[in-house]
Length: 177
Length: 177
Image (cartoon, rainbow over all chains, first blue to last red; front, top):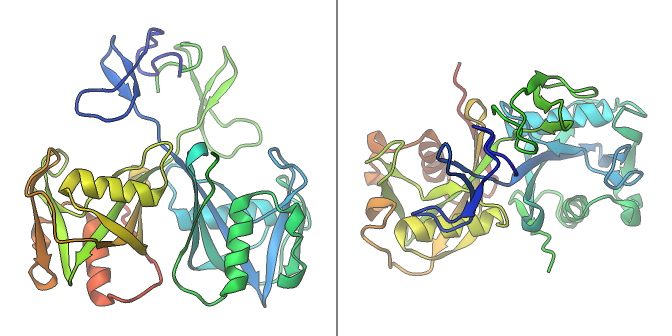
């Protein structure tokens, strides 16, 4: 942040406001404190008859790697709705939320993944979409582990395979030291 | 958002960028798209020997109402860490995360609560803090339902009482029509 989004002032201060405990961008011109917070990535583990639907990314980062359908949650949207929207956008498939499956946080990147176990309502999907080079089902013993895009997906898939009927949410984290 | 936080330009456009599906603030001067996303509120249901620890809010909104300890997740923090930090700030108590208990979303307010079931490590807490007018334990049959600050707390407490050992996350939502 270089300029105040409220008044346009370019002389922002980076201070700990009174009563606070963290540094914030502060505009002395209009007295606005600019808070910055982690973002939610909503996604899913989409299952149909024991197979998981994965999408090969058509966008950076990790172009060409396989991933669980997921993307930034939008304002005005619940995480469940966001997960089903991303599923449809990336794979053309539809489903129903069974339960929240994984919460995977990346504190260094200010991201929190909320991944739902989704029961697909049919076997239908699009072989490619604008966001995916390729979409297909994988049996759980043929997941291309070395070609998975992100730690969050690896963690959720490993957790699912270790205990498919576990109801307790899997809490995972990737910390860069 | 009135001014571009990247270049200070005050002539922002509110458009659907190419390939997108939602309106965003866009700066034609420096070609920046400004995304705005929901924020996470991390908190907990803090339990000790069957009693729940609540805090009476010393800040607006809902000044003077009882609430589960919770607050905005910070950059650089995992939801679990955020929940324990808020617990300590608001009540002076310490505990350990047992499991994720409730995800309660308020799409109209662009907020998602992540409330963890926390086992307090002792009965110790502060009777007042800078954020709480009063802190105390409640037996589950003496919760002051009409004096609870937010729907998210009511939902989490009701879900806990209905099924204390349920491991599946309770998914709740408040939508303003």
